[in-house]
Length: 253
Picture 1 (cartoon, rainbow, N blue to C red):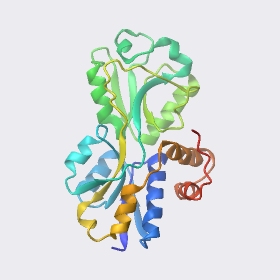
Picture 2 (cartoon, rainbow, N blue to C red):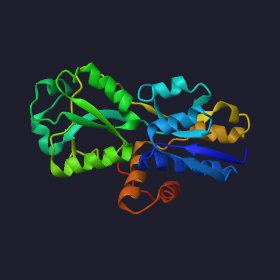
Picture 3 (cartoon, rainbow, N blue to C red):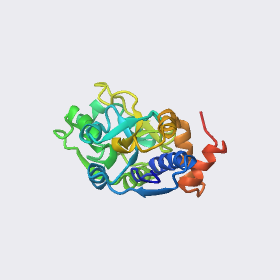
């Protein structure tokens, strides 16, 4: 196999992860790699139609479980990093709310909750679990990067809004966000960021390549450092991945 179609969610974290995977393919002589991204529905459709050979990455067992169960032609491999989800508010308004179960009786928090498409389904499970529709809240799905930009704006303007987000993320600092308690424990545990690969192509790829992808480990700090490099240091995803590979990223622990 000499070419690969590589898909990813359209955010710097996922693009940087894809760029790191590209370096593995290139090391094994596969240089013809077409990148495919877009909105959530289009990516899912492309996967179902076999238009994407490798996808980086889905978060399991909870966040993207509908993807892994619906895509029987895809195989799960690897554990690139360990994301987790949380609900938060801008730190500037943290005195107004401390727990998700307080939202029903809170009168100051805005009722519209903007959610990145890639985590919408899972966020809705949490939303429904706390019966927030009854309290007048509603979810508004947005493309991932659009959602992240809206979160940054809310932080800058100190708006009383709910921000469903994930780690790793450069927005997730004590100066910017205050995590809400989840007494029902609906946000689940830490996830595994897995690679989806079309089962039929695993037989045409070198076994050493598959083994390397299976063993590939970036870790949350590296993924966040790559995102930071892309957002604040004018690096593109490939430059950030190269900096990681060469040990030139500043990784905060």
